[in-house]
Amino acid sequence: MDIGILLLGVAVLIGAVVVSATGGDRKIARLDRRLARVEQKLDAIAANLGVDLPEPELATVKALLAEGKKIQAVRAYREATGADLKEAADAVERLGG
Image (spheres, rainbow, N blue to C red):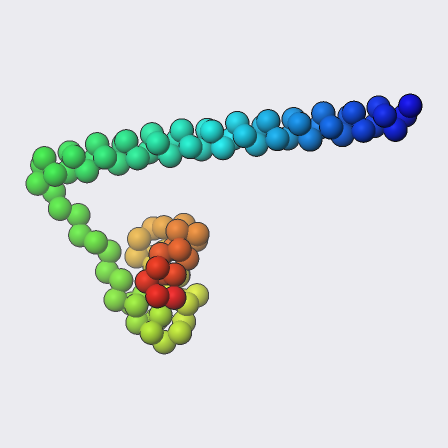
């Protein structure tokens, strides 16, 4: 009988974790959509005002990649763009790292 109650408790706990994780994913997806809309609006405003934002200079990043210094390239990308670690690592990977 005690094992049955223990298993029921574990099942309820697992269910609660799954439900809370799913809710968090939905919140993140909703925030991603909102951020995308804000970025679209900012792009439209900048275009309307004639503001052209230059792309960040990535020559240093590319040079470090050519030398095989991937970690330093990620660090340089983060400094040039303000990206977080994952974004920078993904971008450096796309650049040929």
